[in-house]
Length: 67
Image (cartoon, rainbow, N blue to C red):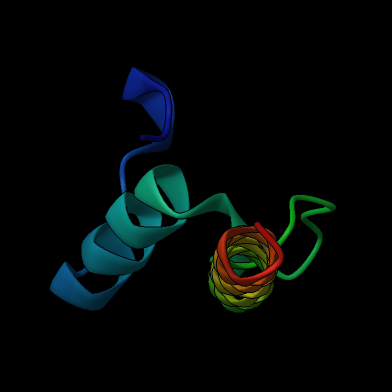
């Protein structure tokens, strides 16, 4: 939130300040990664983990059949 001497004048400014404080990627000059970037990274990680799990399961099945 802004410093004491720099209080927002209107409700809209107060909400904007609160949002930018809680979600830094909303600020125009921020170099923080966006929430969308975070969601994309989590989605890609989830897909990769599923693929790895499936590959391990397939290998286990092949090993059982080769016995």
